[in-house]
Image (cartoon, rainbow, N blue to C red; front, side, top):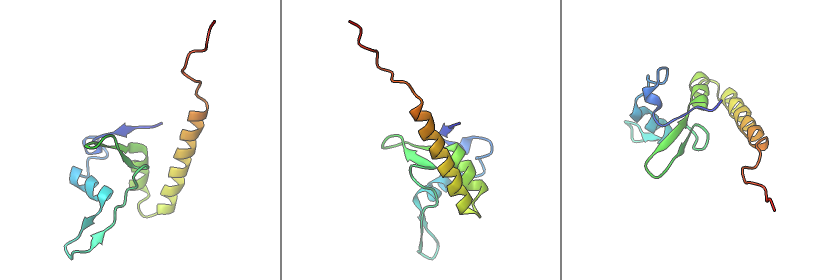
Length: 102
């Protein structure tokens, strides 16, 4: 099941983080010492750009990320399983183009 949301901070269960917190997780930030803290979310997995102004979040993988924050290997296993499931569902689709009828 794939749930994608543009605003996870408005969904119960994901509303503990603000919009700015998601932005920091996605892009990284400079802490009070001036050191850069790298991003924790991966583009293409937990989030991706919809267009030049909007990014979308994959709620299934965000949920996995937050649950397995102390165990990143488990999160990577969930991502691999999710991507394999997506590939499997794409293979089973029939072509949508009409057949040539003479």
